[in-house]
Amino acid sequence: MNSTSYTPPWGLKNGLSMSVYAGIFAGKKWKKNIQFPEPSYEEKIFMGAQETPIFGLVAIPENPRGTIVGTYGIVGDLDNQWYLRVLARKAYAAGYAVVIFDWRAHGKTAQLSPTLTSDGIYEGEDFVRIAAEAKTMGCPAPFWLTGFSLGGQLALWGIKSAQTVASWGQNLPIEASDIAGGAVICPNLDSNRSLSYLVSSPWGKYIEKRIAKQLKKLAWKIHEYHPEELDSEAIRRANSIWGFDEELVIKRLGCSSVEEYYHASSPLPLLPNLSKPTLIFYAADDPLFDPSIIPDLKTACTDNSYIDLRVTQYGGHVGYISNKNCQRESGDSDRWWAWNRILDWFESR
Image (cartoon, rainbow, N blue to C red; front, side):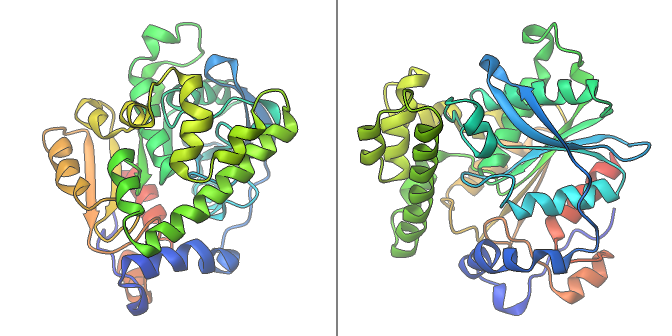
């Protein structure tokens, strides 16, 4: 594997500045910072858990060496989630079949179904069912599951679900061994702690409001597509991330409180029991997540030889943009350090 040391540009040696740059500015010129073209995709409607239709895109190169299945974070869709598109281009160019999808309540999946998010409770099974259908399309094993931010949380649940597919998915055309494992970037691990931490500072409150605004737009879109499914008054009251989950999500999942829901869906407790190779990149300066999670994350992974945990000094939230010297030392052709390391890691397995 190439070098795993990471160094950001001088002006981005701060978690907040890296996160702002990656979240706002890097996406405006990402195509200029990658040499690989967009794959030729086939649209596919997969059937997820609870018979929930899920929209995805599939690209299969000649003689594929494996398949990468991935999705994105808390808001967005396949049309604007450029960071996922970076991975897809790089993975396809490296010879992998690629499956990317709009997860529950997002993008074209929201047009197909009013089913709301469950932050991993059902999305883990979605990952496995998508992999199973992709296999029938010609996408070969080994399958690797991936995502970033909340999408990383979902991918961790996918790895857990893959371990037990023999007990719940006997009729699926996939074996537990077909899913090799996964890799995630800055996954959300403990929603209760991190959301409380996020709204404890002025900049955190600003970020939370931006996310909440996008969630509200998402809810109105679902209401537009499925007017009988969501209460318009509940959508109007959902003015925060917590409020979105309280007003629209928890009752459908049978949870009595948002705290209960966040506890049930947070993947930190899963980590000691994962039994498939799993790479986790986590930045110590990530401004969205409570720093107190890091010692618990290290403890959760310490005795699990299947987990390769990389806690880096820098990186921000889903940033990991490298400087020129770091690119030269790593043998990278571009600035997307974390995706490069993940592809190296898949190759090494």
